Length: 218
Image 1 (cartoon, helix red, strand yellow):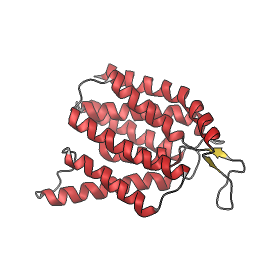
Image 2 (tube, rainbow, N blue to C red; image 1 turned 180 degrees about the vertical axis):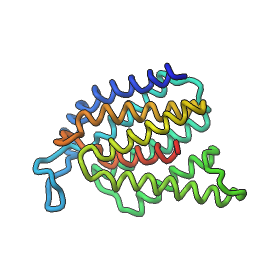
Image 3 (tube, rainbow, N blue to C red; image 1 turned 135 degrees about the horizontal axis):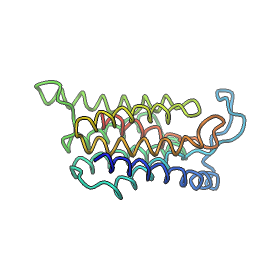
Image 4 (cartoon, one colour; image 1 turned 90 degrees about the horizontal axis):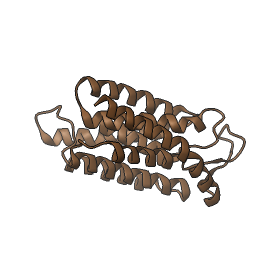
């Protein structure tokens, strides 16, 4: 199990390091750029869409080196994460209303619940499902709001995933460990380009994706 986690981490790391410059060039070509204004501290236009590099590295590492997943749980997590990441790309490029983004996040969280990924705190399923929906949407938006400094969201996401990985390894939680290992590698690879002064931002595509995966893993 430990060897598999290391392979997932290393492959996600390498793919994020190699893929982020490609995404940066794509963002510049498409004009998906965060331009300076009075509310921002950077003085030069910075490409967005760095979250796509995190997303692709994470997904690819899991699919290549994983193999003992609960397929229904994995599919629901990846479909939900893909949905919020797509919403983030759309918001980065064209802008979305807050209500539309919120509705999309609740839809993604509902996909988890339908597949059986929800908390078991209460003896009543209705309360467990409601808590799960609120948890996923709250953590997803918390990471989105946290993305306001170079390296902050990526760093917090990596640190949280490291602790999830350690807990998973100690308790033989294979799916949790694999997801966490992939997230640590993808975040570290992206942070090579996102530490101050950042040459690319993850944008909503990355922060929403990170928040959703961390909420699902938790």
